[in-house]
Image (cartoon, rainbow, N blue to C red; front, side, top):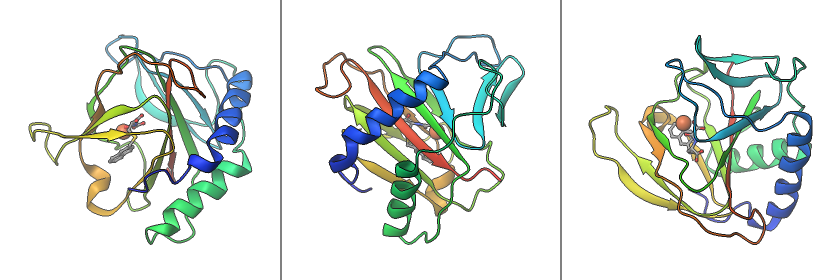
Length: 193
Ligand code: MD3
Ligand code: FE
């Protein structure tokens, strides 16, 4: 948990997100069951996470644009590497970055991140904009989650035993953030392969 680690470069990070979204738009993916997710997503880097009626997977091609996902802004790679090494994961080189966009009412149900082949590498997460309640569960879905607020500029590195815990985001409350307006953004850097 690196409180405010990305705050001093949050303006540039947000500008990069806007730039990326002009190449690969935010979209509401469908779950396997055909429900529209309330969180809008896009990816950058060699691989991107996608969900549709066939399920979840990583792809090299954006199904919306039919092109490669936009490449990593160098600022993203530098920050992810710097954050990971701060907590002892040296030389972290992600091959995927999922960007989630939450608006009022969006939520992410409790889940585990299991679609990455590399389950040793950490996941680095960066929060921008409106605050949200992170739900930090245990190793089974029934463990009652601990609530923890994530703020603009917070960075969390998930490695080791915490990598496989159930987690989610509680329903976003409405608000207005000076940088991101009515949204919360979360960037997660992953090493998939
Ligand atoms: C704990 N995103 O994209 S970030 C996700 O804020 C995801 O958008 C949330 O869960 C968000 O999969 C939470 C923090 C996070 C990300 C990955 C984790 C926590 C994690 C993987 C394992 C354990
Ligand atoms: Fe997750």
